[in-house]
Amino acid sequence: MNKLFVYGTLQEKTIQLELTNRFQEGELDSISGFKVLRDYFVDDDYYPRLVEQSDGLVYGRVLEFSDDEIYIIDEYESEMYTRQFMETNKGDVVEVYMPVLNPQIV
Image (cartoon, rainbow, N blue to C red; front, side, top):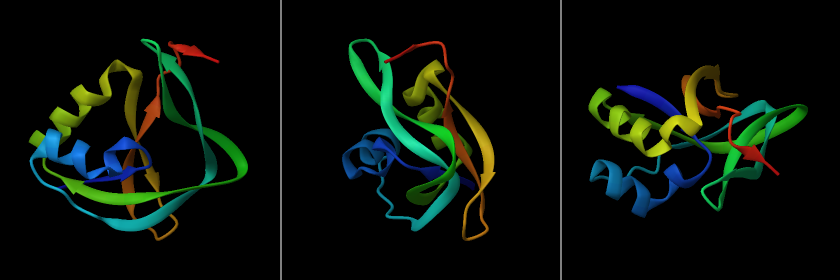
């Protein structure tokens, strides 16, 4: 299983059910050194992104997905995001969707 730290729409029950046919609450956790901005503008909509901030703290959830589910989630996140490994404040090594900074940032 793949551990994924989610901080946006992937926490939502409807999105998880749509993508993986199951819902998981996961474990509440956080990552230091970042903040969430909702200024990632693509296709006439705004999306959240993590940006570095020395005193920042982002809360989210650690969820576990199979390789097949990760493939589906990668498609959902599209070329706008790429997965990067990070360590949460509880010590889990997780993957986090980080923005690819080609789209317009406003």
